[in-house]
Every structure is written in C-alpha cells, then in structure tokens.
Amino acid sequence: MDHPVPSGWLPLSPCTSACLPAPAVRTGLPQALRLIAVGVVLLTALLALPFVHPVKHRGRWLRACSQALLRAAGVRLRITPTSEAGGAVWGGVLVVANHLSWIDVLALAAVAPMRPLAKHEVARWPPIGRLARCAGALFVDRAGLRAVPATVAEITATLRGRDAVVVFPEGTTWCGAAAGPFRRAAFQAALDAQAPVRPVAITFWHADGAPARAAAFVGTQSLFDSILRVLRTPGMICEVTVLDDLAPTGDRRALARRAEAAIARATGVPHRARQPALVG
Image (tube, rainbow, N blue to C red; front, side, top):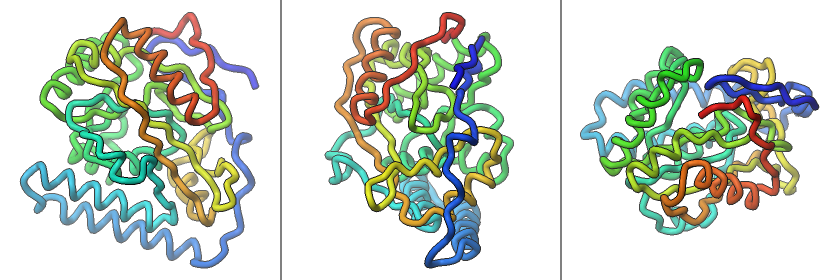
C-alpha cells in the first residue's frame, strides 16, 4: 500500500476501506436495538449535562456517559492495569494514544476525565460537538501551521492548570495493522509545562483474541457507517493499556519518539517513518 506524502499540518493515512473486513452478520441483540440504545444514552447525556454542576462533577458525569455509550454499542472496555489504571493520578498529564476509531475518544473518557485535542470541525458536529465542548475540548485548525503556536500555548496552560489533556499525535486514524508517525507539537507543550507524558496503547479484539479490524474508522466511510459497522460486530473489546509515564526531558522530537516507541511495543505495530515534508 503506497503512503501518500502529507504536507503542512494536515496528516494523511494510507488506510482505506480495503483494510476493513466484510460487515459481520449480527447475532443476538438486533443492530437496530443497539442503535436505539446508543441514541437514548446520547440524548440523556445531552439533556442532563447542563444540570450537572460544578465542573468537577461534570467530568464524572461524562465518564459515566462514555462508559454507558460503549456498553450500548456492545463494546467492552478492558483497562490494563485493571485497577483504576493502576491508581495513576490523571491531573496535569499529557496523555498520548494511537488512533484507530471514534471509539478511542469514548474509551479514554471512560478511564478518567481529560480534555481532548480535536480538529475544529468537530465543534460543528451535532450532538458530538456539544459533548466535546462540555468535555473542555481544545480545538485545533489542522489545515494551517500558523495556529500551531497558539495551540501549543493553550495545551501548556491547560497542563499547568492541572487538567489532563489527551492527544492523538498521529493526527488521523489508522487501521491497526499499520500506524503513523507521531507529530511533535503537543510534546512541546509537555516540555514547556514540565508535565509528564503518559502513553496509552489502544487495541481492539474479538472474544477469541483475533484483532477486531471493524473498529477502524478509515477510508471513505462516514461516521454513521462506522457506527453501524461496530454495531454489527458482536463481542468487540477495546483494550486501553496505560503505560509508564515519560519524564518531560530532552527536546520534543526525542520525547515524541519515546512515546511512539512505548506504544509500538505495547501494540506490536511499528509506526511508519516520518516524511520529510511533515511539519509539526
């Protein structure tokens, strides 16, 4: 599979719909009922969220809603270490993870309250945009390099304020059989704030231990198409492996490589080499 050469702030993935398996035939609870269950949980979250105060309780509410959405979609969350992510403190850390699916965001939100870095288009996606804003999402314009310094400064300030920030440094989704290079900009924020970097490896499995490639949100499929594909896949497990923190030392290039290597060891999937034209 050829790797397109990205340019500017906008990363590209070579993964297409050809990376996905044929849609599974539903067994057990019909797909329509799962879709209704997801809709009910999402609507309940949106209606109740304005009444959840103060902000510290809102984080707990969003965590509970994320867990409920995963259950409604038939996705089982498995956290390693299993005891509340090993008792880790989540305030003021830069969480970095590989990116395969829209499920990744829900899975991390189900682990602990953290503010996601998202592309600015997400803010206009109803009702997802509203939930993202309520979660304290930081929005970035991936099409323009001029916005990068301001984004780095915003992440730095958020980390210094003792909030956790989650970033997907690949910048786009991959299929899980391959992985992309980590962009470096967010790691500069960790260095500036002297905040630890916490790598998190995300993998998807079937109950029999085979990789669940249907989870990947790649190619030309729409978000709704991807959701339906997940609902048609029985027994999907999303495993979130919380790795050891990395000290904010060295330069952002070295820090990004350390995080990338830690996640690659956990997933068993090497990350492609960074292209010369890629900036960030």
